Image 1: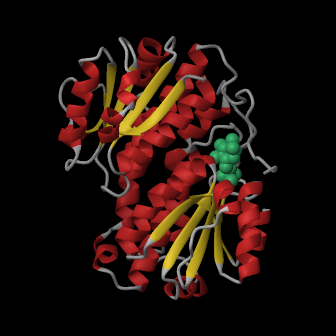
Image 2 (image 1 turned 45 degrees about the horizontal axis):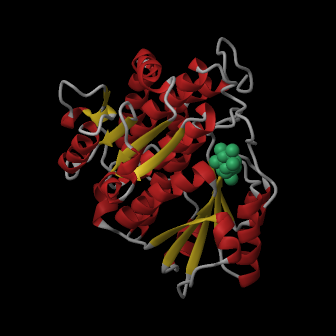
Length: 362
Ligand code: G6P
């Protein structure tokens, strides 16, 4: 069953491996034969009446929200803000005239997010919860629910729920864009693009030895590490850094590649691992020159690069996927690096110290 490890030593690796299947399940649940989408009309109309989306979430779900902002803005043309639930709780931003709220939560039980939903309900605004757990509190208390269908996620560090959340956001953004008749949504071939993503993830999880060797060579004894990237690669870098921190206790920062030089580059020493994520041809050259800056200060650089932008020296190659969906492929090597670093150091990968799967206190 989904909650048994079978041949796996840890749930985290099992759940990493399940990601292509999770994407296929979401395709089946939400995409009809004729390409139309299973999103309720009520929900589309509710969002159609909104002038701005407010995504509220915590942890990895917050990082999925950051990617969602690009999807909703580019495909549906709806301005979108992303907020950390615990911050929003006591310091809500100035809201637009017609806000619509989206709660992203694997468990549906995170207290920080529940607190915000309570306020939103008191204010009388409409909301959608995107969650993996049917009938969870945030699902029951929001007006609409979109399920992730990822199956139980047991490892504390979230992997398949993150890719499922981004997939669900892509589905919703396409559906809203079609409803609003945007050209970007019409041009975005969701079904075939998601199939490409599932295949890309499959090929990445089939090459685990690459990530395992990199983890052994560069991360097994290092005190700290950096992930860098620009645009969506920066959003991936933040989630990638969280994965490594959570399970391997290596102090890791996800950084906007261009911002490193404005202070943080002082932390680079001989042997500091810097992992660069490069999937966007518009910024690839700039990120590569930021890499030169850290290489000249002694950093060990690992490149995670889309195949169309790769050189012979790049260590981890990502199959090419649609530019809005690159985070779904680019996160996989980072999940594997986190897993193998933790295992190499002898930790309980599924139950990192001090962490809980679902945090029900504020
Ligand atoms: C906890 C978990 C994280 C998770 C966060 C949000 O801190 O350890 O992995 O991302 O809660 O959880 P949610 O269930 O709301 O997505």
